[in-house]
Amino acid sequence: MIRSTLAAVAVAAGLWAFGAMATAEDKKEVKLTGTLVCGKCGLKETPKCSNVLQVKEGDKTVNYFLDDKGTGEDYHEGVCGGEKVAGVTVTGVVTEKDGKKYVKPTKVETKK
Image 1 (cartoon, rainbow, N blue to C red):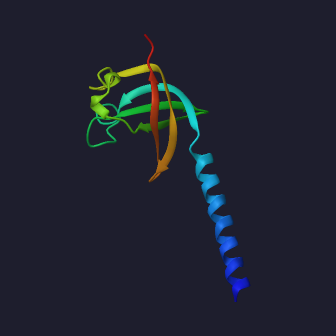
Image 2: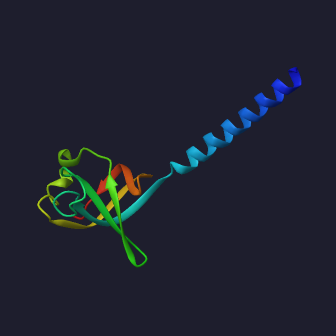
Image 3: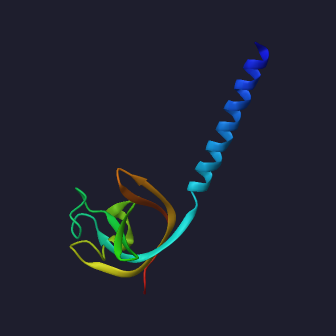
């Protein structure tokens, strides 16, 4: 009985360690460059103004919704109202939810 319990604990610990390793691997920072647009005004995909980075990947354009302060960000002023800002580089961690890609930015650089 004790052997069975110890074996179960060892297997659970191994699975936990593997899960933690996969989670840490998924949270690598990436650097994305593309065009910044407003999720509401430009794309009509969000109920309120937000920041979305459009990145060209192969033949298609992929939208990365920025997990930031939205209209509270300095760089939002340039995109609200349907405008676009090209050459924006966003560094952060990418996640996916409900078929959409999100990036939690640690750094946003716009062309001067």
